[in-house]
Image (tube, rainbow, N blue to C red; front, side, top):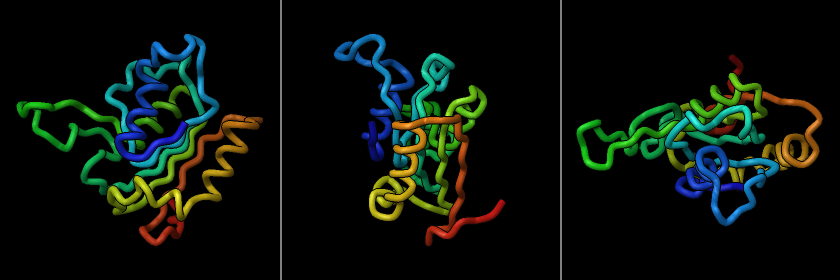
Length: 155
């Protein structure tokens, strides 16, 4: 399953947080692709819900937090306040649980990374689908940090 922005949040929350009454109880997608998405809780992401996950996110996204922050960065006393856990927080949780993930972080990237991977990262997406979702042979915990031009930054 894949989604972008609010669609990514739908996919992530469906898979990791609550499921759907329209799907069989044992339904588990082969893999998830999230472009600038977030979870509203990490509590339900446990060892029973490990799904290979590809996460694309700009570190300066003004709409969906890369790490953990309130929805639209609202203050706690504001109406509609709720926490969101973005790609970095999800990757840390999957890492701690021993799950397979690929975190693609764009330094200073904004919410454009909700759509750019579909044009710029098809090779990464196809590699993930083949090696992690369709034909997994091992648990891979991959992180790539790039500048806005897509050039890898060595840590």
